[in-house]
Length: 109
Length: 160
Image (cartoon, rainbow over all chains, first blue to last red; front, side, top):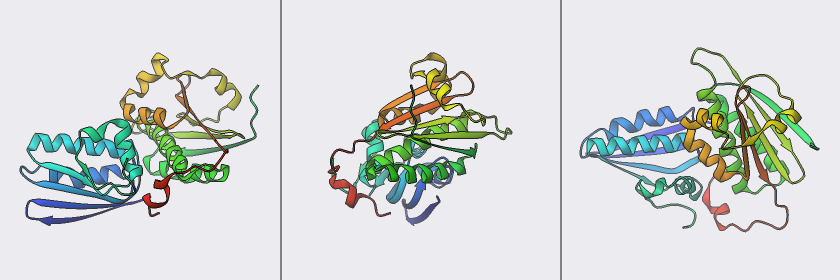
């Protein structure tokens, strides 16, 4: 029931490797890691979600917030490598239409 | 009228860090009942959403509250009730009082957790909310025992 976040920076590109569970308890931690990055103009943030084994609407909320922040500050955010389970939540809620998602693991739909 | 085969009740402090505990519990119950991997994941999300709503909206910041969760285990379904006031509930009585989701007051109360409620409705077969004495969310997931679920994603999707 924990969340691990590892950050790698290559000039204006930031990689966040997320592992564990994103829920109401851990979401603030993710938000704190994400928002400073999306707040930098011209920077790109890639969020690697392959090791996220649980996520619910609080996680969706964080990514919606990050997307808003990136639009506001002229940065970009992309979610990559999520499992089809996690991707399904974006699909059900229609958020896959507004958020940049690539490389879904475990079969395409 | 209502025939319960088994009933499990748990109380948690109304704090976000305990929502994960309810997931572990329901995962055990649903697994025991024979739900598929994907169904168990759906059930875990729905229960977490309901508990998270209760944590966020039921109590004021300085108020120490409790959430009561009841699992009705039937031959053909799992019923989960989330009650945002700490008292035990009379399962039969509460079931009778529940109305459909669109009862005005309770939806308004839960509207801030709109995405969560939307997910609950998408993932569960039946959702009822009653707002008379605290908010009660009741969610039902039916169990289809006939045949093995064929889902290619199940094996490869998650490495847990």
